[in-house]
Image 1 (cartoon, rainbow, N blue to C red):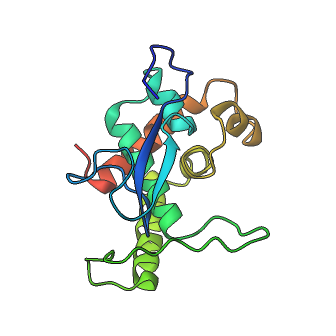
Image 2 (tube, rainbow, N blue to C red; image 1 turned 180 degrees about the vertical axis):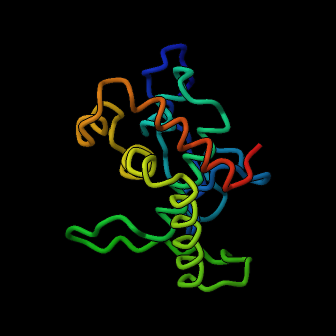
Length: 169
């Protein structure tokens, strides 16, 4: 689907599906139907971070930091299980890092915990709610009993600290 000038419009792309989730970039995979393996259609503007970034409220560095912490949260499988077990898709040839699935999950959990610690105790709440749990910023502000429009500043500070942790320039 072509990108429009409306920042609220959905932006769908087809991505290669790996054991860690949809692959963001690949030299060999440019979108469209994969030659082999599985694919998934992803809405790039579905997360609150994407919404904030599309409207200029987050810098590229802050957005990348939010995506990295969310990626580690998902890889560590920290989301609550409700009714079914949605194990990651295993694709032949993945895991070139020499780690087993369990070892990659433990490594992601350690990175996530360290990134949250780097954000700090006063900033980690809004960071987790918006970047990982997918809550909108106004909902996170209400849940934390914060004044309206204060979350954007606090989230920006938290994402800057997380970007420092991940060494994002």
